[in-house]
Image (cartoon, rainbow, N blue to C red):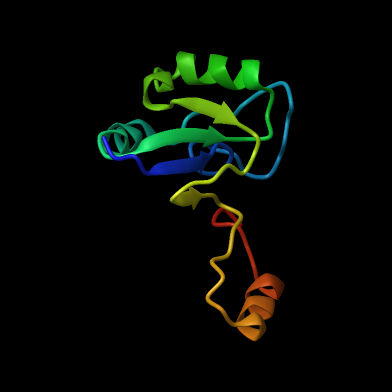
Length: 110
């Protein structure tokens, strides 16, 4: 396994989240997520990045049998090689382009 760490967001990336946040319930796992994690975990150190309750999140990972692919759950943007999130924009060095991207941003499920 590589020493490169990838932080993966939970809502909208690994589950069927569509913007209706419920702090007591995490939506169902997204089809293909387990296979993706299985492949990725062979090459990278994977941490789950979420603002959700850590105990509820761990139970969700166990229930979906994907806990084995993660080395940790965090709500802190830790140093990482890469971040995977459904609500992000890659900064390309141009603030004018960035402003345009911010003003027209939509999540993939909208």
